[in-house]
Image (cartoon, rainbow, N blue to C red):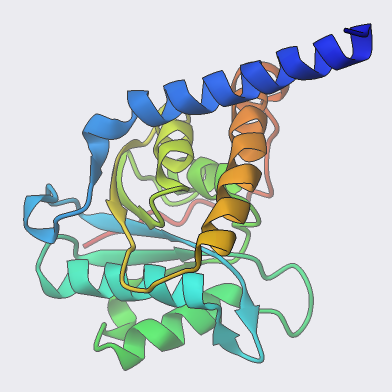
Length: 207
């Protein structure tokens, strides 16, 4: 076996092992049953892309899960965090519109326009919006990384799985592969790089 092949196998084992450990370590703070979710003041709804002014199916799934939490009295505010880095692409704004269509009042929706990736959203939740605890809403494959990042960036987070829609096995396999790499990047950001995202004036979320 060549050195390059051995190195590649070793790297793959590290990636798979870290992803498996991350998923295992976060299992106690992730909930699927709405009735079992512990209440938090704010739900962080992570972006997942928009197209033609509408949320992608994955993003719509997250917003609908967050709206269900709101109507069940599990949270009082929704922090919609996504990308608005280019003109004409306003992910948080689209998220807000969809939540309002689901009956969430505009005054209970806060927008984070600089949540370009999960690390940035979790960092800004603490640094800009003053959150020390929150409920994170996203798909099951994404939640272990999201709650891990929040916890290491000063936000005591629990997660709620957005599982309202069916996604094909091929799509889910793509997500899992991407997440394996993203989970490794999350470890690097927390323990090595410690990047500082776009910041600004504090905007603490109040009741």
